[in-house]
Length: 324
Image (cartoon, rainbow, N blue to C red; front, side, top):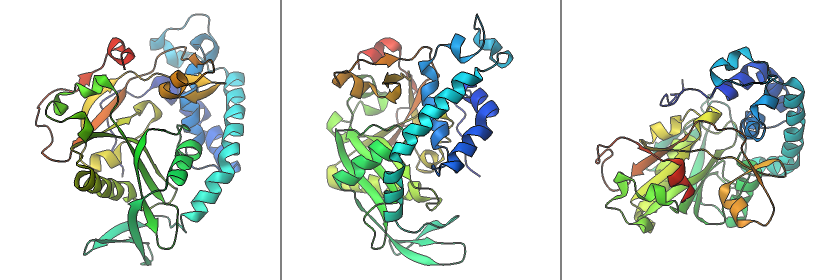
């Protein structure tokens, strides 16, 4: 049973779409051979490009009355068609990389013996697993075409993965960049840690049917490597709870909640994008029509103990966020 974080209330917009259109979304994922939850995640990212009077059939919207409003089915179905077409464009790359990551087994897990990891299936089949760097080409392809954000980070510093024997593509992947957000650099946990020793886990992905503890094992290997080879002292990562992520692998890796910050949505040609991409680009973009709940930032100290600062999570205001 997965452990779910409960620091924030569930996002009412996402939950309403999930309740009323969950079966439709799951059916479309199955019919089009999409990865599980991929269409749901895209729908969650794209709700905010509509104003609430169009998203719901109403003349005046009050959030506390959301359960009384009816979702605009024509708008939702139209957006689902748009998102299905976008996902179809990336499907060949997804299939190619998943095949190149090796055969997967439902309900497998990773075990370690004398420092070496093996994938063990329910039937007892055991195979060698290795940890190592990921090539720039494969890593950026995962970021752009497979990870739900669909935007590659050009400032990626390190990319690591878990590999099955004789396969060039990892079945579990993680990418790290230098911390470049000043509002996070002021965290109490970082007062004694120079920026050059702080990295952000920016992307993490595991193909369906990966070993159930794959991400926890991958994180542990990444942190050991970053600490020993790059002198990294602290790692941060964000969790968008609006999309119903459980955060179980973060909890298993002993991250602590350190901050809340605004979640901002940007769109290029109707597709979700990131602030970094739209601000560095030449094309015009649109922003969200209404606000969502904040995202949560988690941190892990690689050289000391957690909760040394004994401080409450920092709340990043819109003004702090806009200063980057």
